[in-house]
Amino acid sequence: MSKIRLTPNASGTGTVTLTVPSTSTDRTITLPDSTGNVVTTGDSGTITAPMLDGGQSGSAPAFTVRAWVNFKGTGTVTIRDSGNVSSITDNGTGNYTVNFTTSMPNTDYATAIAWSEDNNHSPTGSLPTARAVNTYATGSVRFHPVQYGSGFFDCQLLTLIVVG
Image (cartoon, rainbow, N blue to C red; front, side):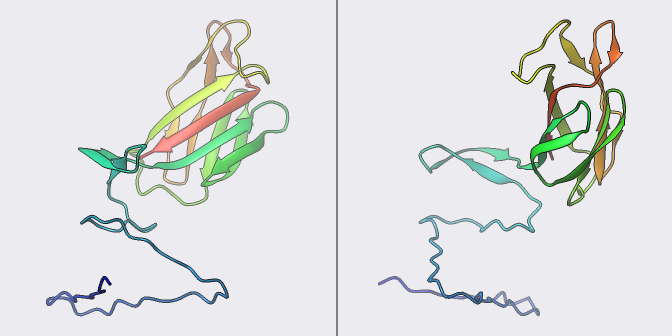
């Protein structure tokens, strides 16, 4: 039988408390048979990317998606699905602000934006191109889809991913 050992840090003065939730269901947490750190929702560092077989390979860090959204950008702007996005602000034709539920730690995050002009996820007419994000803020990001020769335009479907 394996043993459990808790080893305090000799220079620490704080108390670490493990709290068991109020549940009527048995819960099991299985730790991997390897040395490393447990990553929690409060961590802001990087983690090593797991391979599909569950193993770990390489030393390049994996960065998590901090927010994402799939939304309808015509008529009444509507979120179809999202993570860490509280709302979309329609600032006018082809002018959207994505508002985060939990703010970013700084404004140095990266975004990936894609859109289509019809509900079949395919462009019609001139191919749209991305215009630089207008405003990076910790609580939101503002951007404009641009169509060659036509300027800003409302898109049927848009997606935004924030990494940082």
